[in-house]
Length: 165
Image (cartoon, rainbow, N blue to C red; front, side, top):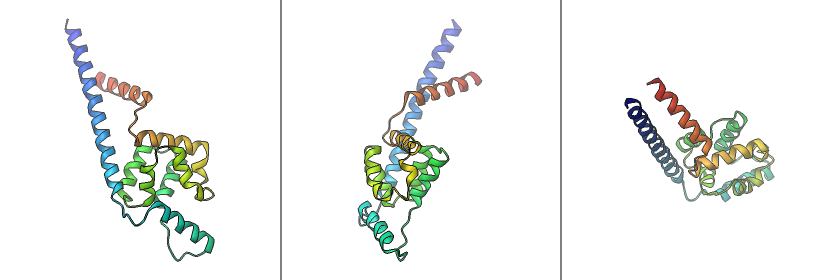
């Protein structure tokens, strides 16, 4: 009889843990979106692309174009970094960058890559299969989808933690 009670308690704890993880994840995503949306309205993505194009065409470096969030993304892809860590880092360090706003506004990887098409020569890693897979994971996380694989990993981790308690 005691074993049944223990199993019920474990199931209840597991369910509450998953709910807590979901709430924390939703709160993190809301915080990230709020930080990234605080950007200067006058410096949109189209203006950013125009600056990049004009600098490339004229060969001048008079206007320094900040590629930092894009370069960080490329490094994350090269090193198979966690997309959720990238989102958190970028939302804190570059919330006002036009790239970050464009990333939020895009609904699909295709739309995102289409916006980056003018810079494909400078950012080839984003257009390779590895880059597209990483971007797909990024979009799943940023749009709030939780894959079954993620849920099963969390369940396994919680089961192990429960067994250790």
